[in-house]
Amino acid sequence: MKRITAILLTLFCVYCLTGCGSRSFSEVKIDYGKSAIYTKEEMDEAIEVIRQRFTEEQWKDCELHRITYGADEQCNAENLAWMNELRDPGDAPEPFTRCIMFTSEFHSPKTNSGAFNTDEEYYGWQWWLARTDGGPWQIMTCGY
Image (cartoon, rainbow, N blue to C red):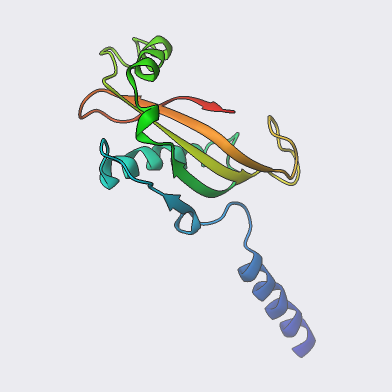
């Protein structure tokens, strides 16, 4: 009985130390950079939309490591026009007035990685989001 208890206790400790599935979002490193356009709160709202994507089927076994603000220079009229070209009027009836870009680092699943290369680290994965003034951020596109 002591041996079984010791084995179970060991397995429990290993499980707690290694976890299963994705890292806790609280462990994700966030680099806000410097912005004259967006507050930390506005960036946090956009980051939360990205984090939610990692709970969806395609992303759920990916391990998110880092999210980095792209820079104010990315939030220009040309990229805003691009976001409006991508806009589905059924999902966003009003034209977007703001856009933002983040990059991320994440690790793909060790098995059954679907659209990703199996067990690989991804760097510089871009996330483009847009919104109307005061509206919620929407992911418009992501990738390299």
